[in-house]
Length: 79
Image 1 (tube, rainbow, N blue to C red):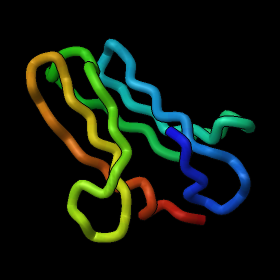
Image 2: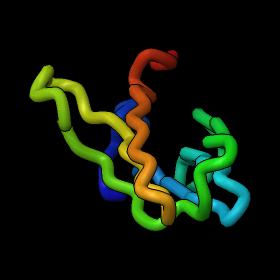
Image 3: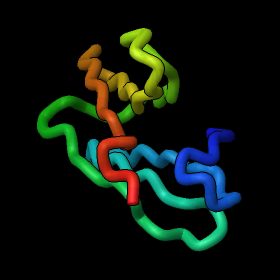
């Protein structure tokens, strides 16, 4: 993911794990800025970062191997 959401020169790295866990980290420092787990949904198959709601703010969208789709706003946690 090539986006500097926090304006600190660090792009975001979005990681999906086999366990259903999703982490968003700053790519230089490795600082975790968002984490969640999608329970009983299967493996994370695809992650997107775009303005799905057309609200002007991008969201992390996760798609699982079982077809589950979940969106998360990470800009709510801006420091």
